[in-house]
Length: 261
Length: 325
Image (cartoon, rainbow over all chains, first blue to last red; front, side, top):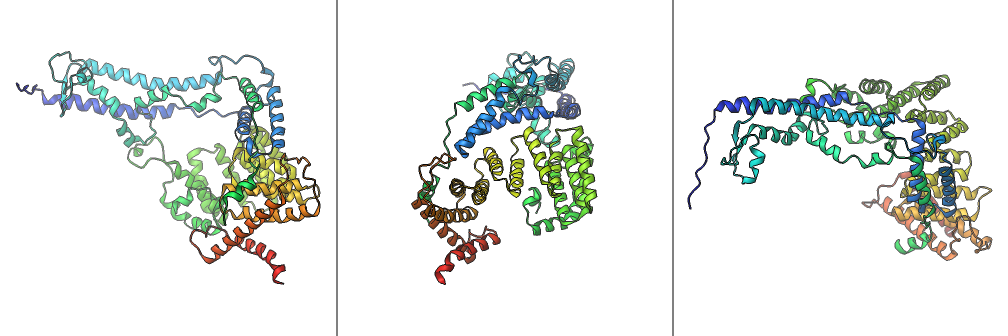
């Protein structure tokens, strides 16, 4: 069994100082810069008007009543249900009662929704612009360099990941090209940013991408493009089919059974 | 020490509040006065934390409670420096400060006027409208406060704090059905709050003692206390209420043979005399156990308030007196 000779490539040690360190430093500085740019560009959350608050909380009241109906007595529950159902039906809680029955406005034309999209756009821009610039910069100056040899062996599958931009078939996957170092920096600098900027920073690109994939589920309930009237109608349905069991029924017997002095 | 500064100070005992406010000058000297979010120094200094500002807010409230207005003002200034004067919460805090330093009724009226001006500009300012209601209550203008609270709850019907405040106001004006309604709303938001269950039991008991009261209210009150005990073992207030209600219920049930078949307005039949008797015995036994163990210094039984224990002792003595005589 022939021993595979260890590949050696004679590199100029200057490569290390003039490629590896500059890429790392630039990546960190861009992250810090992006964090502060995002902080500066962020708009304060828009204040809600009183009718909007009323609309949301009245719906929540119905949800609460449905979820916790059992703590109040049957007549109390019936009275609240009748009141809420009548008010939901007439649209008394709606932000704009005269618009009841109309189709939900197109979220693209709704100025309130545009606000949210602008925020998302800004976040995207802060991510895409520097990424493009740095990628171009690295491609222009550093493409094709093998800069570092990882101190541990790797399988052949890592070749495409670690040797982007260097199309050499026989080179050991331990060798790493400059573009791959850049990609590794994108993924690996999170903890550095955590150390520098605190844990809720906006520096990491990865975090931003994660945020876009799973937007908060809570925002969906009152988000733009949702017709509150439809939600009220659905809540009427829910309240009407609810079976009410009073918790206090038989509580004295339960207590006598469980408590021993 | 610092941990008690992170909790809302309303529940602190006077001694702890005093201790906190005595530390205020030291704390104010050592904590950073302002953290600029864009400076270079933020790269190596500790990051700004929400706890810092919570500390300031609670410290200010403790200082106002104990009359250290200088430190309170300093806290307020630092908060204003950080969040700006038009922050809703700060507007309410500044109002609170002005209320505290006001020394006569005219000054309070001026603060009230200020609140109203803010609310005309921005009716959705929740902290300030709550402050306005609190000020109305402290100025003994109960009817106005009730109206204001009703308007507030019309816009924000899921606010448990406001509902319970409203129920207190209704109780103080003797309007028990309304108070019961408000407390039921609180329970709809926080279904397992045993103290609210007990409070509702107390209000129902008061309602049953008023002229329009009925034995149904009394039965419902007893069941509320049962529920509060079910949710919180060894709950002194619950057992106290249970004993009060069962005693009264026993006399009522034996005096007037209330037709058991009559459909009560709670939808539940009246409890049987037998189970009421057993509940009364249970409450008596539990209360005496709590009193015995607390005064005996048992570990794990020391969490009760001193006045509560004395009241329970007194209730037990009231029972025992006819026998010893």
